[in-house]
Image 1: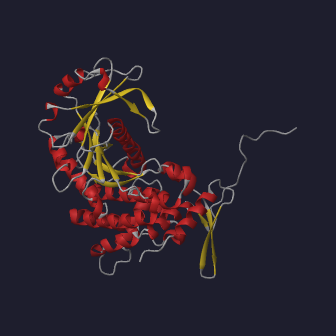
Image 2: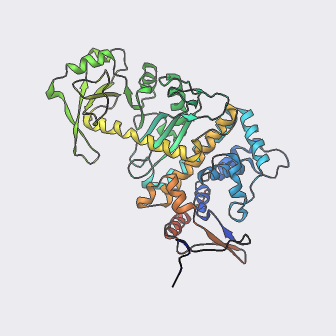
Image 3: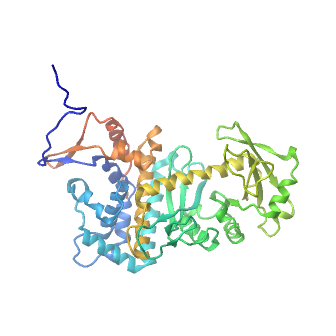
Amino acid sequence: MKHSIGSYPRVRVQDDGRQVVSQAGAVLLIETARKTGLDQAISQALAPWRRPRAVHDPGKALLDVALAVALGGDCLADVAMLRCEPAVFGPVASDPTISRLIDTLAASGEKALQAIRSARSEARHRAWSLAGKNAPDADGQVVIDLDGVLVIAHSDKQGAAPTWKKTYGHHPLTAFLDHGQGGTGEPVAALLRPGNAGSNTAADHITTARLALAQLPKKYRRGRQTLIRCDSAGGTHDFVAWLAKRGRWLSYSVGMVITEAIHSHVLKIPAPAWTPAIETDGEVRNGAWVAELTGDVLTGWPKGMRLIIRKERPHPGAQLRITDADGMRITCFATNTPDRPIAALELRHRLRARAEDRIRAARATGLRNLPLHHTAQNKVWLEIVQIALDLLAWMPMLALTGQARLFEPRRLRFCLFSAAGQLVTTGRRRILRLAHHWPWTGEITAALERLALLPNPG
């Protein structure tokens, strides 16, 4: 008679394993940084902050922290996971050295932040050129989504304040580049603000938009081929006027607050003027209609602005607002795109909801909390988080295909980065052997082969 010993087999654990590499799938991020030239760009940008006779390069140290964040870390000390694997990640600075680097960069203020941003912009330009038809500008247009995010602080930190959701922390304003249905997205700006920062602050939206545009290739920093999308927090006269300013000519799709004047015009729209809304596949969206407002309701706004209204049956149990009408949920947005059906414009604006997916990915990649005390330090941390998110966006864009290209950070860590490997040294070569039985080993090796075919930076 056999006696059960439990649901799982018993194993004996020893701590004398050698040449075993954990997080072996992280070589995908390393190769991405190498092919895009991000490592060289950051190293050159931070060269002025390297002290004489310093052992560690500031750019390499900052990129190491970003790699640790991309792999799931949420504080500076988590770089220890890289320090344990010098054969894969090279020499990694100690915790005190990294802390001193962050303090030095924070003391330099905007000068250091601008150096990091310029390095990211340079690497982004190369990443897009390598991606070809998978690049976010392959169709000749780029879409930038602006959105705020609440970051809760569990201790008293500089700049933390009560938020509009009755929590305590910070209220950064972020900008993400939309990769469309075939990909995810990448960050292009993050403006650190106190928790009580207003939502409809035009100056903050203008600053964030400037930072975002500076990350793009020069031909996309002005002109109709660049679309700025945001919710009703950006629906202010100053921000819309800045977007439409002569010489800038940016396209925009901005949510608007339902004012009393707009509400009165909505009640006067005749039934034949409403057009059925559509889905991404072109089919009619059930229970949703759109219409365009004209006349004196546009007085005071930039020339060429179109105001589009959308009404939809609310979900069961949803509570109507005072601005809703006839049992329908009413929303509206403004755009300056001419000669396009309003149903297509409404669908384009509704796809701004993908920014929420980017924010969820950012929360899972170092933005769950701000680990440092001073505002200047946390501004550097935001740049580190954006570098990590850049790598997590560029790697699938350059190396993955099919459904794997849509993996969010948590899925990438679970399937690809967490793969274990064995490091074999033969002659002058180092070979990383991945576990053959791991379900995603083939995906990892195929991605590495695609990266190997890309040209090295000049």
